[in-house]
Amino acid sequence: MNKSEIKVYLYRWIILAVYFFISVIIQIQWLTFASISSTAQEFYQIFALRIDFLSMIYTKRMLK
Image (cartoon, rainbow, N blue to C red; front, side, top):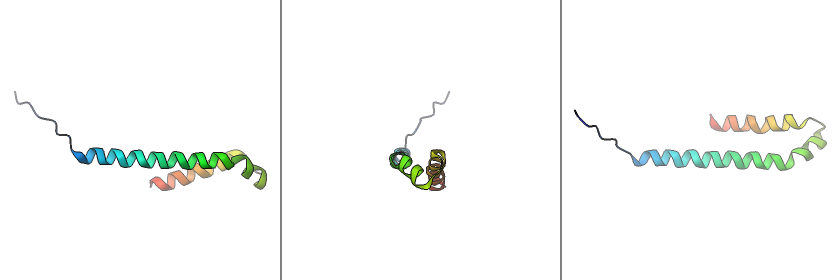
């Protein structure tokens, strides 16, 4: 039987690091919206859910 060796490339770690930093940036963006949600809700006279949707839409566009 031939034993095949598994090669681990440095490129894998680079992609993992990029994915990690993108995830951190997205979480920071969500946290900044959370702190102004109630103020924006009062100012615009809308439901807080609409403000939450705004952060979700922005995140979706970032990932494209």
